[in-house]
Length: 159
Image 1 (cartoon, one colour):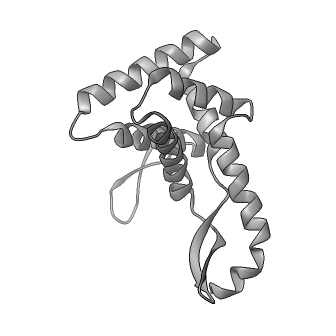
Image 2: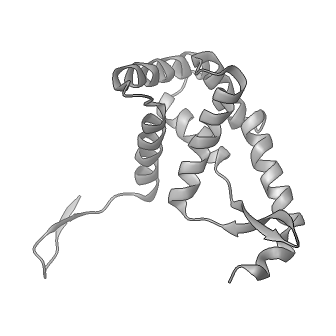
């Protein structure tokens, strides 16, 4: 739906909140797959991912991908702060853009740390296990939440 702004006569687009973040997830995830200029490989990998998600879950693959990434998004992040010669994590809330970025970074990093390369089957396992609140990505999110509740007294250092 497009509207014309009455002062600047520019067209502005208004869309649904979830639609915006759905496309934002796809763009960030696709952009993080591109490594050393392999755009075609990333495009084919993402298409294969959608096909496999549809075969595995028997529902719309875009919704499966979106819902699993929403489950992985962190609520707070721990920012390092040195207090008394010791580095501790200070929990701070983050914006929606950073939430999306960190969720995709976590998934890509989990795959690269474990296998040193991206495998389609392992990525699908991580995404589907995230839907059911299991797996490495959910453990990482829960660990960040626990550490943020432990270190909540450090928020006073960031104002």
